[in-house]
Amino acid sequence: MKTNTYTLKVAGIEAQKQLKDLWEESFRQAYTDVHSPENIESYCSENFTDKEALKFLEDPQTVCTLASLNGLKVGLSVVKHHDCPIELEASASELKQLYILASEYGTGLGKILIEDAFRIAKEAGNDRIWLCVSAINYRAQSFYSKFGFSKIGNGPTLKVGSDRLPSLIMSLKL
Image 1 (cartoon, rainbow, N blue to C red):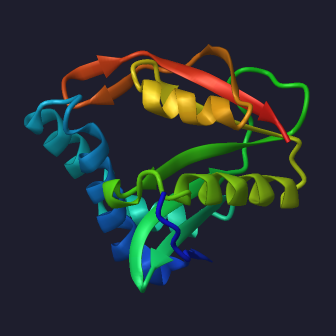
Image 2: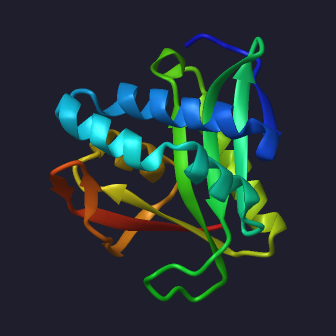
């Protein structure tokens, strides 16, 4: 395992292009073996736009954190403070996204970002954190399980181009 020193920074609207570019690059790297090039292209063109990035960055209920290594953006997390679609016994935040570039797999960056997401949720006064993950994304499910997340129900159907994927909702008491 290589050890790197990452810098985390909450992104403001000035990071719109960096967020958009990092979203798209990390998504493409993570899902190239899962979806067709056409479906990835369709998803990226619909979801990773300047408009979508600005929407996230301007939302007062959303905290977007960018991780840098030697000045290069290599990962991100997005935490949104809102209720889970499955009723929880406590106030909650959603870990909406956690993406890192493939070059950073196995470096500990995922752990750094998820622990930072826990801190953000706690500082907002929430007792739980939840997320939605594709039912076929076993790597992500395993990662979240290592931190104590457990499945609490089925989530919405995720659409990537013409692919329709079932999802799971996982939750963790902070």
